[in-house]
Length: 312
Image (cartoon, rainbow, N blue to C red; front, side, top):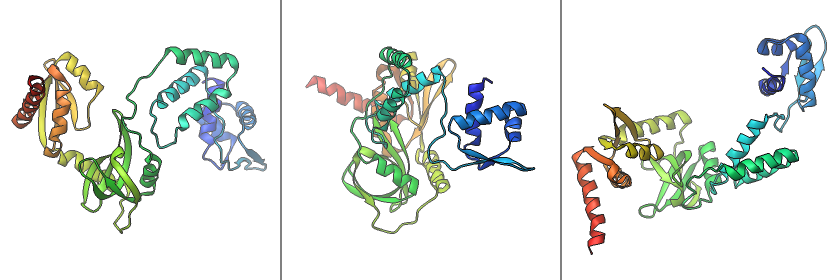
């Protein structure tokens, strides 16, 4: 292990400790006492706050720090960080108030001029394209805080018809330009997936409900994934259909290869049948429904509706 890499690993190793001895570094990183002594001196110069307690059982006492201990990155790692930050700036709605752009600016200012120029050259010829948010969601930070604090929210939800719901949210996730939440409707005692852009008038619950810990919420999610989707389906794909599936798919479906032929297999609930039909229509001629018959008939009806637009 190179010295710079070892020093970084030592910083990470010590970050949660209150005290340590040279032997801790010697055993963990297989280094000599002399090397461990030199490393401690360099760690201190890098910003690790410590003082020495002398005596038979002498040790180093680490001082509590509120900021991150400096970590050093090699050139390739720095380039990877800036590329990742550039990709994240494409997601205009995040729970962090556009902090990615500011982080990028701060880090960029710490670089020497030659390295700045190289980073700019790389970012000018390498791009990451993703689906930008369809609708901006201004409440993501509040939703994230409610998830972490296990708070129950009262939300006016408008996806189908306007209704007031009381939910404990489990997580936030971003898919195909849309922010979603998994959560438990504590009034109806029902798990669901909710679009954040359809959430309005978000506030803490004005009623008292039982709250659930992470393990209990995980059980609700698992039951939802295994029991709610109770109708199996199977669809044959062309080679290009397989590529389309790999670009865009959902948790209730997976890819299966049989005798060299690709299939989408999974399960759905009747409540989500229209959504599944729309998804299969988006695959065009590259998908063929094997079963069930009801899914096939709904798919064909949708195709007839589309065709009728061109006959009128």
